[in-house]
Image (tube, rainbow, N blue to C red; front, side, top):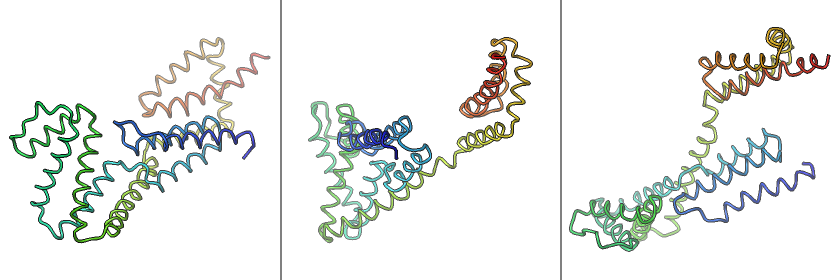
Length: 279
């Protein structure tokens, strides 16, 4: 790496570290906050040209695949709850667990809510939980409500699991299940872009464009284009607009059309037109 790019690399690292250090906003999941930091850092790395574009993309894909950073916190908490439920249900009935669990959730929500005046406690347990959840969501956010309910379930189920298992054993099982979830989700999300037909359309368009330029076909088309419309610059502008209008219905991607076809046409007749103006 060149010495002049070292400050750019330091900026890249500092941006990533900043998102790890700064707490996530209340209404945002932690994994989404970290993913945003990685996205901004990658965009900065591309703009500052810290490395070649291909290397930056491969590093970003590897980070997503290996770290499982794209796994939602809500999915991790749900996996944690299911792992504890599998341990607890071996020694307890599901009905007894659900009844005690609902009571714990009601208690946690009631303690977290500020305005308790309009709450009707003389109703069905599930209806009461829904009412408390609605009030708490209005006071804080849906993310905070889901986080509170999930953490209450995890704490309650963990206490039940401790009756027949050690904390080390519980942590090991939970960690293994969450690691499997992150691994599968990370690899799936990292490689999902390669299954997108739009991406391959853009790639093929760029490859065809490079072939047209390398073979000299582009120069021939450019001279023919200038010969018809190049008497005035406004003629070239109108011709470009008409070309894009004709291609729009048959090219499904605006990016592919503008980035690999229209821009290519501009590049093709740029040099010949400059040479003609000089002569």
